[in-house]
Image (cartoon, rainbow, N blue to C red; front, side):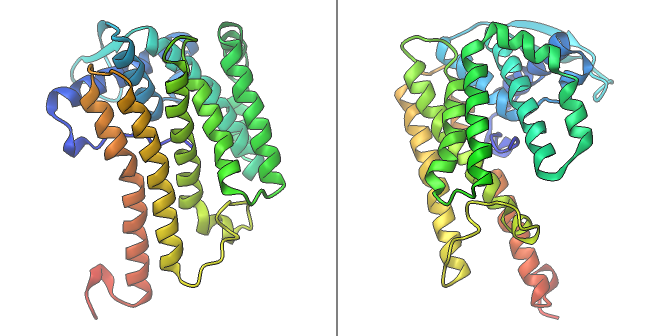
Length: 290
């Protein structure tokens, strides 16, 4: 369920984009330092958002380092690393391991199960450091697995399990901001789960796999699309409200870019694919009549 919390690069100023990239590279370097090269394979933009959010809220500084990236070897890259980077890297490992296990259960992907096992020692190290967050992730993942196996039809309940899990991950410290961070993470987690289900709906129907949207009965396809868009919009609206209640000035432009624009990048891509498929069915390639 990774890959939905991203920036809209076209709408982000050059300096802000540079800062975001530096935090992304910092997360990559921290994963490498704590887990080795295999840790870098877990890197995602979702956790980069968490780094920027916590850095902005707690007004953290950072250590700047230059490094050579094998993907971009022609010039040195810049990484910004701080306490939030270290925390996000650890949560990245925990969530990715459960995501790999989930993929194993869904499709018996042996390679993903084997990859998850490569992080056993790292997982236990992180559990010792953040017992509360790891226990919460394990609890909600267990409940989510059971609910999906029982084909839970209450969309709010099933999405809420991912929301609670994400809320616990967002609550870095037990302080005055814990409740608001949890609220923000809760709605973002629900958005992620619902967007993932929305994207996989046709594939899940084809393979007769569980999907919370599968049993919805709508007279027209447009009715379902309207419902899905309103539901997703409602989740991000509540998420943005929590963000706006926090006194964040540092990197607020990056965070607003993600919350108000970036998170919809995948949705817009899905709509584009659907329009292309519809044109193909009607025999109108590239939107033109034959």
